[in-house]
Image (cartoon, rainbow, N blue to C red):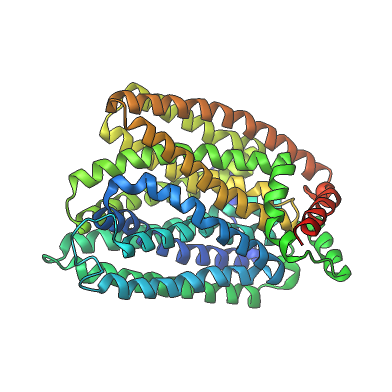
Length: 478
């Protein structure tokens, strides 16, 4: 009896032999990319706060909104020019080279972190913040667009939790290394150690690019099709030589997002989550800036934050994500995180203390990265290539920046109120957004299930109107 129960439970994490290389190399790639993210992300907060000033974060988020628009237009154009894995090469290699550049800049005795003067005119601090905004914006977009294009819904349900577990392991290893090393550094040792972390991150990104190379070489072509209906559709387009002009290519993702209610629904999920995170991030960052006067101390604080977050995320992704997706399915799983989010907001409203904010922020990010994000990615699988890559860039990268800009405006407005009133008012607004989020999740789950049951490709029904309209727009532009 016990052996049967154990066999049943262990099957929830089983990887079929023919999928092992594909799943493990995806997990390794995500591990290496996430390891870099967890090293660089704490530095983003500490470097900017101690060079430019923590109070300038809402303003920086407003500027980054404009900075990312040309990058998304460029990315949309590259989708038509490059193969899907080449886009991931571009992301890892370009940002890997950027990490080397910032190693030299931040090591400089005047322009780097050795100069402890906080000044809003310090260009290197601003440049690093925008570099990290680019890294953050395209990190999940580039990896998950590729993963969604080579996995079908069944693969996602069975293996996305395992792939995410790889990212959590990478996050735990590098955040633990960062935290314990900073804790043992001699006085002023951080000025040498922190710039070197950019070199380390660059090496991790180059290794991730090599992992993708192995994936493409080692996995048979037939195992890289993803959702078969989408593969056959894109194959026909390639044979016919269908290719949009440059203007269509750049704006197509935005136009698809506006026209297609399904894609607009995914945008809403990103928008609601990111506003909530911006609100909590801001309050936690102000507390950290006051508590830790040095750049090393504040980096160590965020390293501990990511260590705890990735530890919780690993437990959720390995013990929860895969079994829940296999047992409950995608439709019900989409509803779990927004309901949990609403519960955490109620706790914050009832006990609005500094440690509650810290704990809730960790909880929101851990559950999102480990469970909600991979679950949300399944929504893209039965969609066209244009939705997977172009519209996804606008919903994830641009959409998250719209949300962060909106959240920053909210934070700037709340600065005029008493701190306690501002916090409670912000949490109340977040609760309203979460209620809307729950409704949209239900509707998206229903649409997804209908498409899978009927073997439909979401977005193909919008193809002809979109082409006609954008062609007219291009002609007018010319």
